[in-house]
Length: 352
Ligand code: ATP
Ligand code: MG
Ligand code: FE
Image (cartoon, rainbow, N blue to C red; front, side, top):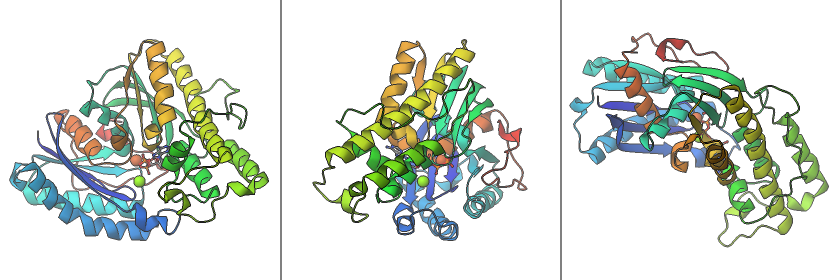
């Protein structure tokens, strides 16, 4: 079924076409540069940008795929979690499109969509453990199938991506700073004792990253020379971090990855029958997180489903791919489909 996927939950307007699990084309309009000026996403500006981009992106996408609009058989849209205004823009567009063309509508939970996009590059494997490490969430799931996904662990405060971004902000890196911390730590061995690995001395599957953030804050207060003089300093061609900066970044990458590893392995211990390990979300683009999870999967003989870095952050392909799975399972929605913003549980009627 040719499925159009629409993603507008935060600061990326994205669309993609998927048919029979194969990506036929995708377009993305990132608002990152606009929001970077404010050091974070400004919801009102995000909604307006989504509205501005959805129509041109659809035209470009159809042209790129060489398909007529009439070929689209189903429209899938991110229904949450995310910013309410941004979600409503995508939902309004999707509903109008579905109604106008007389095709079914599928509301997609953005979170399992992050994990299942791995299916574009690998054969999906179940049962599995899913680790979602995105900008707003750090979740562990037990996944029996694409539509039976149970939350088994979550962060009590900051998400992993958020921790990266907050530490980057302390160092005066541009927003979102996770990728700069990743890059500047490369090639430098981590100091395993520089920062505490947070919230491991318990027997649960939850995370807490706020203590780690405070530890970095205290360290940076003592080493004020680590703070960049200007926000674009790390973007300058030929920029080389000081030894201390490279060590901070490398150690932070390692501390986050190691914390994620311990809880993920704990989840694998609890569900010994699982065959796969899904890792996704923006922080899964981190090179140290990727390496650590590759080692876990290899050592424990699990199939690793880790999307390419460009599919880890928000994209339209994940909505189109998961949307087609839900459509094939008959999980459609009416035009009364509601957006579910951050912090609200999403009803299970679209799978999980
Ligand atoms: P959610 O899906 O929870 O609603 P989101 O969609 O905003 O949140 P994503 O797009 O999945 O989040 O990921 C964005 C996050 O990923 C940002 O916090 C960003 O800093 C982080 N990130 C991206 N690349 C890297 C990297 N290489 N290393 C670490 N963090 C990274
Ligand atoms: Mg984003
Ligand atoms: Fe996301």
